[in-house]
Amino acid sequence: MYNRIDLTLRPSRVAGLTAAAPWLGLSLATLVIAVSGLPWVALLFPLAGLGAVDRWRRCGSLGHRQAVVRLTVRGPQLFATLADNTGTEVHVLPDSRLSGRRLFLALRTIPGGQRLQTVLIPETSRGNVPTDALRRFRTWLRLMPEAPAPINGVTAPPNPMQHPWPGGKTHDH
Image 1 (tube, rainbow, N blue to C red):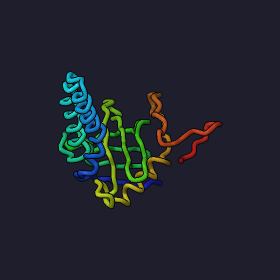
Image 2: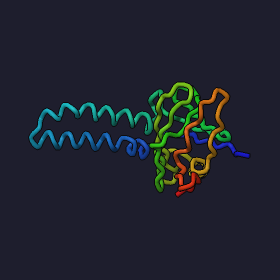
Image 3: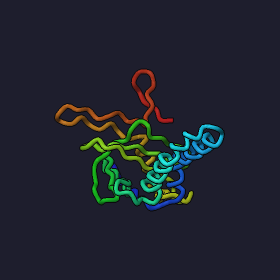
Image 4: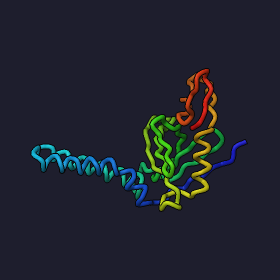
């Protein structure tokens, strides 16, 4: 019923800069505020810089051991492989965002509840994933079925990419 989708991420400067941009903006803001008369704000600059480096390593260079290096769809399930070669089932969190060319993906591992983030950009835009596989993955995200409830009665989280309409029906934008 479902085709397997494999997204193998590769290092990308564009993905790294996109992920680190909020932290770089915070770094710049702390410098501007420090120069304009509040020098104690400059103490926050190293923290913002460390945040930018962490995002770069997790999403750009893929050098962090918790960087997502592969996403695999098998039916209604999504699996992530990390840089330390551990693989786990994950689900997509509601704060994930789809834009015209970029996919900001927030994930939570199902067994441990660890939060992972990655940025997916098509190779045609100097990105980190094959264009055709990303197109199929985006379609799967929008149309993926709700996962069936496991035997122990814990229900799966709702699909955050579907928007509910009155009456409980969903429609994708």
